[in-house]
Length: 490
Image 1 (cartoon, rainbow, N blue to C red):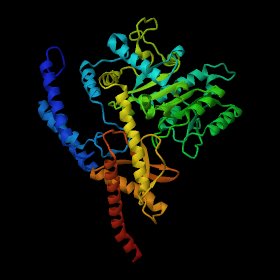
Image 2 (cartoon, helix red, strand yellow):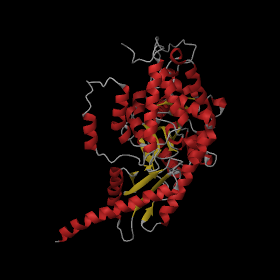
Image 3 (tube, helix red, strand yellow):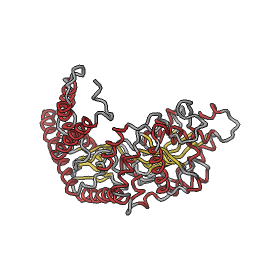
Image 4 (tube, rainbow, N blue to C red):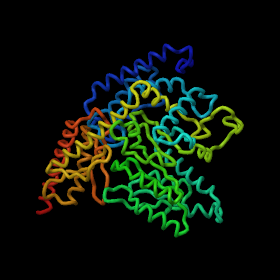
């Protein structure tokens, strides 16, 4: 009756199920030739709606075939060289193997009596990452794995808020909340503003610090903003610097930002969700110089470390500050507990053993191999930017700082408005055919196509192919526009 449950009496069913699943995925991967199918929303809605969830098929092989046709055939494949849109990466095979361990065992890492050695594995990786950042051991660094950069940023800002409010002040706590400010660059992730909202801060609590000409946070403007906040009677609870902005891949000048924070006694949070992979980069680690001076750092292993979603971490220079979010329950993590309970450090209660993915990857290929893979993506972005700059019908926004390239199709004589219009037309056309997936954004009031390169197997020929598809889509759009223009003229 309960043979569908994994137990000591069902190892055969378990093995057959996984073997069949792996075979299905492997055959599918070998046959993919594009990042996605050309199915549109209406077709996919019909496929999903046609499944009667109240009438099970009763056979896993039949379900695997149904799932292949419903899901795998129409999923977006980040391993395909034609996928160049967002911060999604191809995943390390050892990390996928780790998922089989954790899913079957179903370890929950919130308390010692649910996780035992899993707690120690996560803690070892936290310590290892803190050392890679350069946090001094004497400061007692610590951290915790999270669901992603949004959660890491939220907990970092919560910690910064509570640390700030712990300072003696003549105003009451509730009065101080309305005067707390977060200073962040113009290209800080939107989760910073959302975190401030969730923390009960006023709508104007996040102050955008003007950028330099290259788009990075301007340290001179930051100094000015810190002085102005103090003069207005506000308290800066945190300064957020970005090491790899989502839109542009920019890395703020961390040493100068750290200098300003130290001079004003401000908490420095570095959002390195994207650029954190540089911590193991043999060639480009210097781009993160200054990160060791932060009070807190966000790192997403599921971006530039090639791990499956989800695997992120928040690291603190002084781990004692994690206690600011600790909440105890007698049944789970009583205050008198003598063994470590990771829920003491986490905003989540039930939490997967995501650390095992990174652990098995490091034990199989090593940190340097991960870093070299990211180095390849960074180098490819520079090659791609050079190819765009050399093309007479393309416009490059600027040299890439990490692995993001912003450009648009703009033949000679094309005005700004027309170039803007073509961006979404081209992006949608490429996505709808499934032949390539690129992203878009707005910078300086103008629209741009965006290539986010996180696949070390992608090469310049793949980039040139996508540029060719951009040209083709733009020509098709021009042909469709021509009869409309002619009709309008009549």
